[in-house]
Image (cartoon, rainbow, N blue to C red; front, side, top):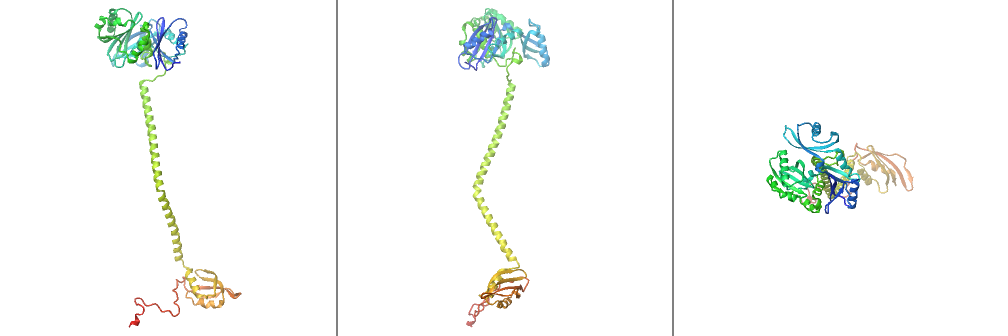
Length: 473
């Protein structure tokens, strides 16, 4: 089953021609007779060729529609549409209720009348064309005039200011007048020789108000005979086949040679614009498409969103990169930080020790000098069990061979006064247990006493004199 293709259906008087352009492969073209149940026959032909169409463009033959160029005064949008419908009633052979039309603006002065091109068809013609797609379940993409899609076959490099395209289909010729590749008017004339065609083209140019024509193009059935007419060469400087695009030139040989005119129109319908200027398809049945302005707006929104997302991603990447660099720097500083923390802990510990030492030095009670003095004064056979002191004095307990001898020893101390027993002396084996209390002689405990020189030792020499200097005299 072939999908992803473009299809165009050309509706003539007695049959319809279908052109299918796949993405890859040759173009397929076939006809379906407009007999009973044409939709069913179309479905059968598509199934036989294994073609699955989701949407298809429809092109009406030029005799089935009315195309008029009108000049109307300027008005607002809604009023102008009503004005077009009212003016068009004088040019169509059916009632306004049975009319389906579309229009486009051609030219006009800023303050003068507006020149428009209007295409109209009978309602049953439009509805009959749409019914063809019901049986094969194909959605309509557009409903146009087939000859108005012919410019879709032109090469982009073809730049002609004014041109008349004569396309022959059977016994009729469609004249399409192009100005800057835009359709200004179309007509259907009976097929004839080159002189008759030249006369019809001259009348058409006069109707448009064109004084000259840059090019005349001929295509379709018997186009070679028309191109050889001298009468056409007198109307335009260039009388040639249409400047086909390279892709169309590759497709044309695949079209049936015996029905070149219809097949070319079907191909033009298949390759026509998704947003045709003149579209007879009801608004509610048209596929959702986007205008160039909408596409530009969507592109700007997409670019803005992309820039915003890029900015957010860029900032996130920048912040992540900065965080990574910061983590690396902190990781490198970690050993130094730990060393500083150790030094800080040691400093704190030493500070506390220093404060303790300073508090001891500043205290009024200094136990070390007193303990040293007691050690020197107490006899060797005495030993202390408890020692307590405060600002008032001290109190000791212990054992000695003769406790009574301790009182005079302690009273002779320069630091102690009122030495006395605070409890009776008791016997414990060969030792006496004692409890002695003494007061300080001064308000503050004594400083560290100088050691008493041993018996027989010489006194220290006076400062500035060497030992034995007196003997030398």
